[in-house]
Length: 349
Image 1 (cartoon, rainbow, N blue to C red):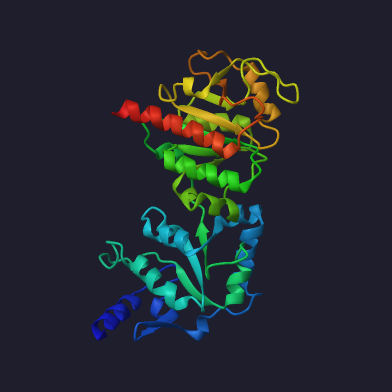
Image 2 (tube, one colour; image 1 turned 90 degrees about the vertical axis):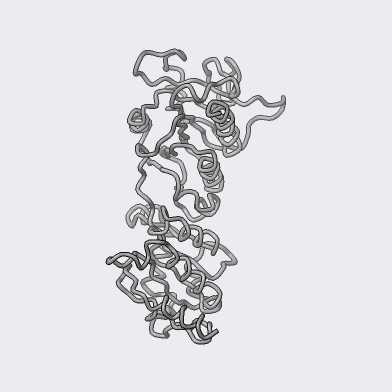
């Protein structure tokens, strides 16, 4: 027991560099129980730290300005620290004093367990870990019952062109309003190996706390691009050598939707070849479907053959029984993503 305690003290005494603060200044170890330094305790719900967390929870503009969001819950925070590609994104972790002894030893192990730790002359980048009262953590949380741990996490800069894919597949969100749907769709994109996710105007913020929770942390593993409009979206797709766009209309042939909008001939999604070239799919809002701008592009688009180098758009649908008007946007996108996975798997065998 004495040896184990001494080893843990040694780990906790190493230098941190998010603010060049040694973890031993934040907490200490006695008989394997972790105590915190009272000087570092955040006890006021009106503190600057709380104000920053609350602004990130509430305001999309603030998240864009600070390029950060709030992640809640031990699983997502631990997963971010466990993954070498995302662990440096974690900036500041607040741990409730009620849960301090449960979480801090695990956090310390995750932070110090990477191979490069202690093997370089430069100290590793580690997050600041602060003890906080239960009321402070509650004020920094977006859920009714929090788990006693929240974190400020950097929003990664998308590197969509650097991802290597033999059969690139992109998803475009056109006015999706439900952060739960956006988060679920992001999770499906990451699971299916999509190359990127593009957000058009009037779509809810994919970095809102609810969307991040619904995505279960996968948002940080997928390039997410913000486009100011369809024109910029097309430019992003061209940078990725993607010139084929599928618009999910949920309409068959030359049917009209409930607003009288005509579509071009629509193809059932399992008759689409998703692996012949880079492809993107546009998913409209839960209530009104595709935006007017996308509908106009769909009707004006060249046929499915298209001209060399010209972006073309095609209508695609998922077959449904009579009387069913539409599918949930995340379900629709997930079905098409996994048809892509099925075709890709066959080609890669």
